[in-house]
Image (cartoon, rainbow, N blue to C red; front, top):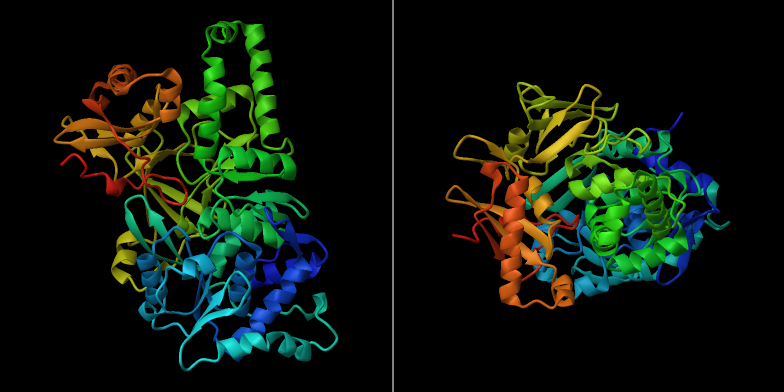
Length: 555
């Protein structure tokens, strides 16, 4: 039977996988075993004890994905304190706000980020500890953190005179109902609230990954998603750690070129990614080949098309290391055209659905059972309800309840009450349908849905998916202005330069795109005009566009 208690999940893994590699800094080629990591966790426990950190105290954590980041997270949770992971992309004001709002008493921070912060704006902190080398970067006047860190190795040796081994691992007893993490994430519709996740929510995601053998002992995992975000954290890190996998931390901007090199070297057994990675590969490497005249003809010949698709599948599979069970796509909607192509060639992919408030998983199906265009099947430990008169055919807001659901928003009773119905269902803010087999189909966000003059529901994400597949379009946003739809387009300047066209010709190409798009959508979904946007749209860490920044652009 798989252990259900979050802290015991960690305890068992570090005991039973002592000799196995745990965390590798990919670029520095430095690897820590589970035993190495357990020793460092024990030192941090000793430090917390000396600093009089109490169970339930909040400890904030911000920095790049490194072994020290993962060790700090585990040390905080297994001590019984509450971890507050902060996305490294947040600006200084946001970091100050999160540290203060969460009531954090300690901050673990990378040196580069600390240079941009102001300790005077975080008055509740007793100290700031470097994620680079676990030295003290700041302590308040009443604290002796620097002295405690200086003497920590000697204190540790005195505590464990015979050395520290697997039998010495004995973490605190703490019930799964207790708060384990407060997660502040940057959303597409504005700055989000502090999501309170109990140990039960985190354990629910972890045990799902272990029970289903999504990840197994000795598996290789390449982590390139931000660990402070629920998706990357839950599976690249938490599940992987608790089952004894080997986690390679990329610690670099995950460009396709960088990723393909790493995939080829590491050959991960399962890959967790966001749609942007696959969509870029499709547009840059696959789409140009299959749209050539000779190739288009060959793909219409039944015998030839299977051969060609098989070769493309093999090439794409090799690009991801060739040894993965499946690629799990989450965090944002996958472009429909890209998905249909992946399905046609027999690529091993699946799409899951979740949100930070569920730590994050709501639905997932393994690729052999996956229904294309869905977001997987609702987990056995979760329930989904669609607010619609016909949930299978008419989209409505997706409501969820179950093991993984948050306990509420930290110090925000009003927002918590607005999010939950009177009978205990949590509103996701997503619109979708649910088939008879429990597969979820996402249509878009309820906040972004546009009501046409004729009362039709318009989901801008669906229009954008079509627009993004047209020539010279890198990404787009559909905006409603006075009852008319406009498309903001950030051009694919690499393709523009390759075609040798000027600004006037690009605008003409966009008008052709508008006409082509309008021929593909319903009359009420047609665009009045396409407007070129000079810069890439600002995005959240999971690579969704921050729509709220552009809603009033045409005013």
